[in-house]
Amino acid sequence: MWYDRENRDHIKIYRHRRVVFGVTPSPFLLGATLNHHLDNAHGNFDNVAKILRKSFYVDNCVTSFETEEQLQKFIVESKILLSSAHFNLRGWQSNVLLNPENFSELESQPDNFETMVLGLIWNLKDDCLSCNINCQKNEGKAITKRSLLSIANHIFDPIGFTAPVTLKPKLILQEIWKLKLKWDENLPKDILNQVKKWLEQLPILASIKIPRCLNLSSNGIKRLTLHVFCDASKKAYAACVFLRVEYEGNVFVKLIQAKARVAPLKDISIPVWNY
Image (cartoon, rainbow, N blue to C red; front, side):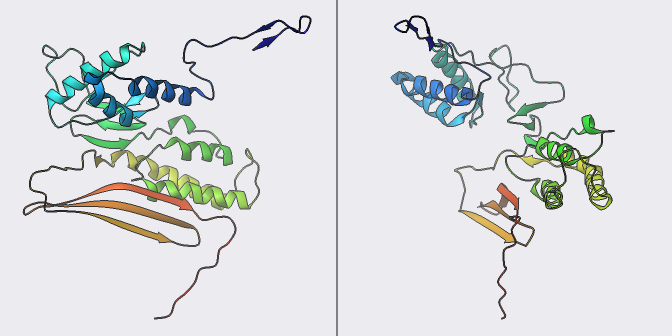
């Protein structure tokens, strides 16, 4: 809104007619706009609207289908549905190598069968997920509290399978906070050695891969169970959840989620029991 001081009765109101990208409320505006169009979808698109509503993460859509035909139908219908809002859904990738002559909407697969999805590396051929480990830009630079925080936050792992490794720099940062060091102050030698040792081992994370699919099939499942493990110490606490699937003669165990956090700076007493 614009206000003219000389003419107090003259007020001009400006309104955005497009969803603005790059400002603080942009993610909320995008999500609200998408939900508005999905909630008002026509009857023929109720099913695809329901899938899209649960599959969007900001401006990325990630979902799964059991057959290639379902995938093709979903892409066509979702493009038609959101085209009414002038959203051009593009950049489709799949672990199913579709014949481009039969289905042109799917983009050609990359040469190395790898693509980025929600900050993780997705190998389309093996259908596995791994972390994007790239700390070369920090080579040769002085390690400070600021740079260590940047490196630790650079590793994006929403599933948490790297938690045992990514917890280490958080513990080191907590030690630095206790010393009340400034952001660009040189680190003590003992802490600096811990950081360098961790950085030397960090590239090993790139070789760790976990399957994307939980191997769930409605045929032959005898039992589904969730197994939760948690533990804590004076320095940190963590928890992880596994899915155990029993088939006829086979058992599959897959990691669903893991979390690890440092303990609060204020010391908390730990009770001890004698058995």
